[in-house]
Image 1 (cartoon, rainbow, N blue to C red):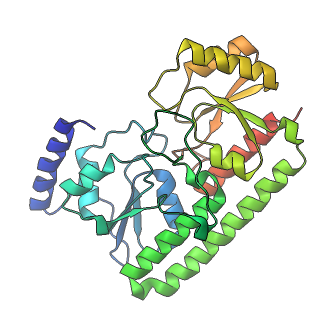
Image 2 (image 1 turned 180 degrees about the horizontal axis):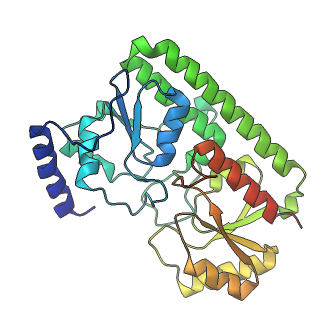
Image 3 (image 1 turned 45 degrees about the vertical axis):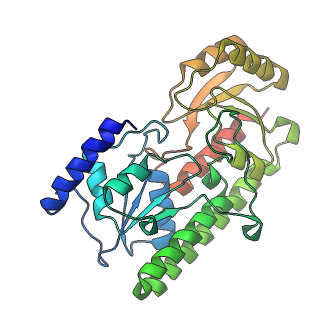
Length: 308
């Protein structure tokens, strides 16, 4: 985010505070407690944790790329009125930090969902495929349902800490959330169980599906770009074309928020089919309008591409 944009948002935040807040802010929940997530994915995971016990909103709209998003003054005003801001961390959505500071929020108002997991959580991070990545870990933890369950636990624990009078309501909601994640994981495992291991190969638009692949024993043959906003070199494209031909992959996946001319060109060279079916960093229209349904849609599309 540019310094000029941050300065503008600081000024507008001050104006918003003087006027009593943004008229476009969502109505408060019964409890009056507001959770602001950076993306639609994390907002929906928060709903798995909290149900409708608090107000939940997101900064990045569904269908928009979190990597290149630049917030507006109205987004900054939402942060100013939030009781808790949840972000992924691990380099994914650091653009929200200057807005939090501009809104005179402190680190105690922020929950970094993806950071600080370790062996005590039975979690091992993957390294990003991009050698030039600014963070040492792949940030897409939630694309494994077990990672999403860690997020649910962290959100529920934090809001219970802040709003102890909601403890029973939140614990009931999060129990349902955990059950839904367990069912999702079992169903996806069953979906891939009859697919031979040698067929479990995938090519995606960017390096988002490492944890999903690890969870379900899938090999990622390659990705079209190292990170959204970065065009691959001719050498990288040639290497991916060779890898696709060698692997026998017949389908390459774009993502709903990432139409890709690069993948279209690669498919033309290899004879593969391009499917723009996957959800990673953002939700979208049905069937990808919730975390659970988006993950089911991903698994169904990927498994179908492996049936040969």
